[in-house]
Image (cartoon, rainbow, N blue to C red):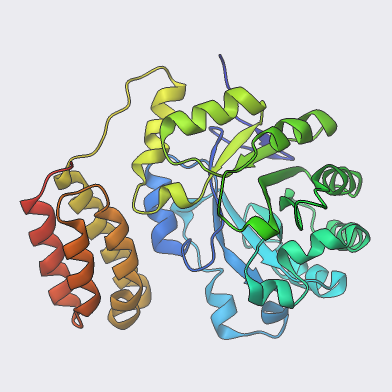
Amino acid sequence: MQFKSPQINSLQLTSPVILAPMAGITSLPYRRIMKSYGASLVFSEMISANGLIRDGHKTRLLLTTCREEFPFGIQLFGDDPVVLAKAAKMVVNAGSLLDINMGCPVKKVVRSGAGSALLQEPRRVGKIINAVRKVYPGPLTVKIRSGWNEQSLNFLEIGQIAEAEGVDAITLHPRPRSQGFSGKADWAHITELKSAINIPVFGSGDIFNAEDGLLMLQQTGCDAIMIGRGGYGNPWLISQLLDLLAGKKVIYPSSAEKLQVALQHLQFHRDHFGGKKTLLEMRKHLCWYARGLEGASHFRATLQKTEQLDQVLDLTKLFFTQTEAV
């Protein structure tokens, strides 16, 4: 079965494997690692449209990029069409693509009326996309869930509104907001959406190994797959998927390879954010790199108590050189 690389408006991707935008995860260092393993499109963390137009320094830092990670997508969230249009106008030349988040289930985002809360207001969805489309000439996408809850699965309605208002592609995570990340994603929703609209549909949800990704493409007919939680500490998932799509054998990394990439990730983080933030944020990433290795639980527990970055480095090197995948 042949899988084409999707085109989003004027943007031609090199493969149907995309990195999902994830708050607190997809910072520049993480994106650089995932891009090096073959992600055809990477995204910023979720960026507040309100924060951006108020010229918040921390918000603007989320737009920091580098040439090697392009094509680079920017994801905005908000609930006000006017504010989102202003923010969209500000990032016209900052990336290759703009995505509007309409699927985030986090309480803080939902309470503000943004993210998946928008699924309760289809008319507002239309107004937001219409306002952004008028000021943003480049590739424009939206990311949604199946609905607010099991009783209001309105992804087909939202998808048709998005297409009518000029969106170039849509990503569906086939769980309602009420489900969070529990249970199983209903990939049949992706199939239904793909049949109902004429723009590219990207699938997201429960892709934890290369076989999962291939199965989603085969079962749903979606145009691309978006890697989220399955990529935590596992950039090899992307290269394995690309190998599988090319008919090649899937190769799994050794402990030595995991160490090499973990240290590269840590160095990218240190160069970009400095030592203090690296100490706080890289602990979770190093724990993810350690998954599947003997003694990982002890490593995680020790890592969380380590207060010096040099000690984190020493502990990481010791752990990965003394263990093998189980």
